[in-house]
Length: 266
Length: 266
DNA sequence: TGCCACAATTCCGAATTTCGGAATTATGAT
DNA sequence: ATCATAATTCCGAAATTCGGAATTGTGGCA
Image (cartoon, rainbow over all chains, first blue to last red; front, side, top):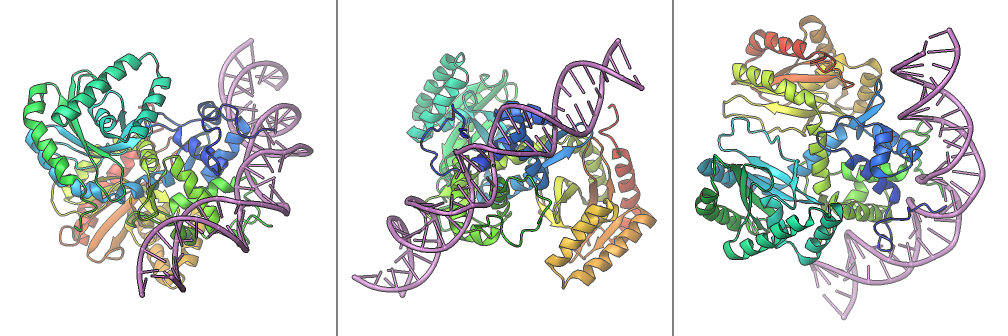
């Protein structure tokens, strides 16, 4: 009875990988921001695992506090341990604290939203978001995702990422939605060109209609991967010209200042 | 070769629990907010598992994006998937959005910090934190933890939690630090009394010197567990009297308004 | 009230996968 | 160059996980 499913993505290389753990994590990972509680059946469908297996997995996750069981509806939602993990992960990132002040300054100056992000699989992940007025300084949006292919942030990552990582991402992006590929490829070609020529990548209404953004990447050091900062706003707040002429130099300065900060003594 | 370790906490009841998954989650969970990257050895010590096992586990977690490997120092830190999970967990909690506005109002009125939390194992976990405009603030964010035994928030939970959950928590609290037990027990006895008499629990300088707070609990419904709201501030911002006389009624109102919101049609 | 459909959970034998001690390799310090 | 520390790999043993099928539980509907 072959345990490892036939179409497994990694035929050979996953030599010592703990399958049970991977599967459990997949169950956790299938909870996406915005969707309500999930039943075992729904989960089984998402992670492509037999129901009995999922049943055992969810039971384990619930016992450990990673999932919360809603008895009346027999569904699961992410539990406190999941929240705490995110807090620990975010709390350990000193780069956030270092970047916050200059990001805030830039946000105030441009009246836009400035965000710091890194890649998570096929998305960009916000690590810190600051707004111009910051009446609520809460990091409401830290931990949320944005398109890798169509956002300025994602494109800046693609433009600067190590070749092997980029190629792997592009490959998976393509097989995810082959129809959108021409549009994706065009955007990325332009992005690499922009990055080389003017140091930033753009997304003018391509991620969401009426939203303009520019972004650039840097390497914080300290063993952390490539990171990206973007400046974005509704078109009526920041025109393309405003972003390119005014925000761009400041953004480049900001990124340059953060280059390798974590490696420098202090 | 007995796989399940001798002193396992749950001798019998964990009938179908996926051990490998539990262990992997323990590895993730041993990363606490504030401590830097961890090596395999350190992890092995924390979770009490053989090094070779931990090695395999961390390799698996890294491959899936839950851990980030820092090559030069050979240590691990929590990865993007962990952050994303926290985001998804927090994003799915509608109660945060519902509670935010009235919490903000209360914060402004009292010039204190108002927080919403739930229990996570032996801590209270902040789900939402709202500050007044006043600049002095505690350094607490959503996803961080606070003492179950000594904070107003923790005491409010203990005072209202279902008996079995409370007893289990108290038991583990006691075996965690038997020396502190008398002080813990006294605080909790007082808390239950306060809860019954005036609807709130207090912590005046007991959690941290110079910090006053009061808290009360409510049941949001929707299958969610008991939650707590607190109002707290440095003593020179809010005296005990100010909290008891002014903040208390408003806090009780707030909590009453949230009682069962998620069950009501909308 | 009884029946049906749907979903979750439990059962159980098979055997793959995990486990961990020991050996090995890598790294860095003295 | 040698030693100490830590991570990883190896490998045989067998416990644990796996998943199909049966069972139990739930809610809707006639």
